[in-house]
Structures are given as C-alpha cells and as structure tokens.
Length: 441
Image 1 (cartoon, rainbow, N blue to C red):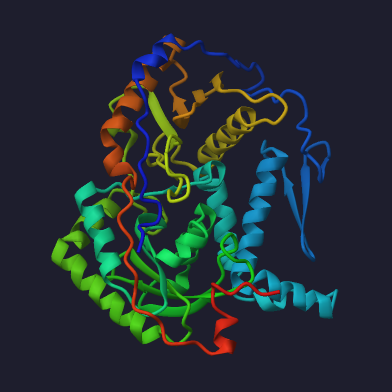
Image 2: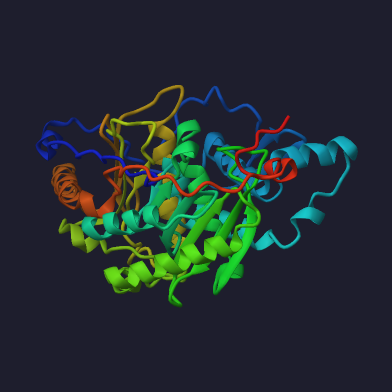
C-alpha cells in the first residue's frame, strides 16, 4: 500500500532571494479593501445586486445557488458549491441522483438527505472559519516527528484486510498518515478534495465514539459507486482510524485490522505523542492539533498559510498545506471572519484569470498582508499593521527558513513502498456493482 500523499515537499528555496524582491503594493484607503480590477471573464452564472452576490451552478439535475455578502469571488463561491455537491454525492452517488430525477423531476431530495443537515452545516461553517483547505486545494497534516509518522505509515501498510483500499489515520480533522492500495492508486491518485471530505465526514457526532460501518462515495475518484467505510475512535481519543474497502461484508475483518493498528500504536508510543499534539489547540473543534505562530520566532507575524508546490512526482503526491492556530487578535468569530475575507481577496487577485499577480503587499486597517506565489510555494501571511515593507521582508525570510527547518515535521514528504492486502473473496455481480471500483453506465 502507498502512503497517501507521501511525496517530497519542496524546500522553500533560498530565503535570501526575498530581500531582492520588488513588492507591488495595494494600499487601500477604504477600510482595507483590495482592489479587484476588471471583472473576471469566467464569472458566468453570476448575478450581483447592490449588496449581494448570487452564483448559480448546474450539476446534472441539481441547481445549486450561493447568496453571499462576503468579498469572495464567483470562482470561490463556485468552489464552495462544488464542495456542497460533493457532500451530497458522497451520500447518494451521482448515478442515484440522476435516476431519481429521471423518474420524477420534482422529487424533493431532502427526503433522502434527512439526517445529513448537520454534516452540510459543519462543512459550510468550516469553509468560513478555516478556508485554507478549499482555497489551496490541499489537506493539513498533524505536525509530527518524521520517524514516528513513518512508523505509523508502515504500521498501516502491515495491517491489511481483504478488499481494503485506503487506510487513514487522523486527529481532529487533520491527517496523520494514509496508506493506499496499489491497484487503486494505479487508476487514480487520491484527490485532496476526496480526502478532505472523508476527514470532515468522520468528524460527525455519529462517529464520536466506538466504531461504525457505512457506505461512502468519493466523488473525485468515482462519483457513481460506493466504498464501505469502517470508522473507529482509538483509545477514547480524538484519534480516528478510517478503513475504506470494497467488500460490504468485511466489517469484522476491518475490526480485526483496527485492533492490530491500535496495538501497534501503543507499542510505538504513538498515542501519547498524538495526545500531546492534540492538547495544544484551544479551539472548540475536536482538539484539532496545531502549533503557535510564536514557534516561528518572527515578531510581527500573526498568521500564515503555506502550501509547497515544487513536488516532482505529481501522480503520487497529495497536496498539503500548513498554518498555525488562530490566536489573538483573531480569537473572536468576527475577527476570524475578517481575516478569512482578506485571504479570499488576496487569493482571488493572485489567481485572477484576467490579470493574475504573483506578489501582493497589502496594507489594511488592522493588519498588513503579503501574498506570494512562486514555482516552489504559495504563501499568505498576516502581519502587524506596524510592519514596514523592509520588516515584512525580514519576517517572510524568517518564516521560509523556519518552514525549511520544520518541513519533515509539518508535511508528509517521502512516499513509502506499496504493500498489497490479501485478496478479497470473489464478489457477486450485485456486490460488484456497488463497490467503489465500479464504473456504472
């Protein structure tokens, strides 16, 4: 099996290069707004009123609508609608939705989605509170010593079961490590959107304790078929083990695999290490492990999002990003939302289809921000409002050096070898048509 996303994260490059960089400035005099420039030519499906933005997205028989008063671009709102659609597909599959509306065009889909409202609400809340995953198209890893992470990856590869396709170990919605079976990866690499969907899904209250067995669809892998997911909390902790397989009758095999993983983690002393990683966060979420921005040692730095880009093996790697815990002055919900809005604006300007930028230095009312995308990384930093351009250069230099020093702990960097699980018993034609590898008509 292959550790999902275990590929070399890039070095941030020579930090000294920053000091020779010319910083374009977007200093706003209207409360810190970033000027958006000309309209995006891809803003089809967009309607704007005096104080609202409406975005429409057609996905098969479903029409999704976003109504927003935030500064998000139409492209970003479409991304959120796609995430909502993926959540619906993960429950029903695209083929099932198409069959339902082919038979009855005015069918009320809420009848089939009953009970999943909380999951959709949590998805929308997470996109507002913590936009990094959706903006950057990446997953966040638990900061962990490389030897322990590699040992846990090796443990997942050893603990196999018939039909097992994917093993994921997570804490508080963040990835510890993952292992993927060879035949699955040979057809399609694990998409970060699918993995993030799984991480959000197992955070539901239904999986808060004990073990569970449920079908789930991975829309980016195959929107028309189900996998079967075994979900268990380990040692009464926020450590979650997710085992994804193709055999609907493999619950007991997966439970045996879980016991092997749990015993192996105790032997490695991993439970204590993950408990310590989870204990830092004071967020209201399930003890999501993080680190303080003070660890960087760059006075004036308040927060950042960093995504490595210079990864050679694009087929096997899983995009990852890192960011510290939000701390004062972003402890209150309205301040967090304001920072999220600023990140969305900077992202929209960097990735504008009409006039993309590579570097933005933006002075807002309460903070200074610097956004920078290169061939090696994508970076968004939030700094003190008193920081000058020269000071910002020094802060970014220190940050890049710190990321380089800590990259083995922050990212899953080295892909381990595959291991192939035991062959599953031959499935009946009816079973085969419901597993995640089935591609229906």
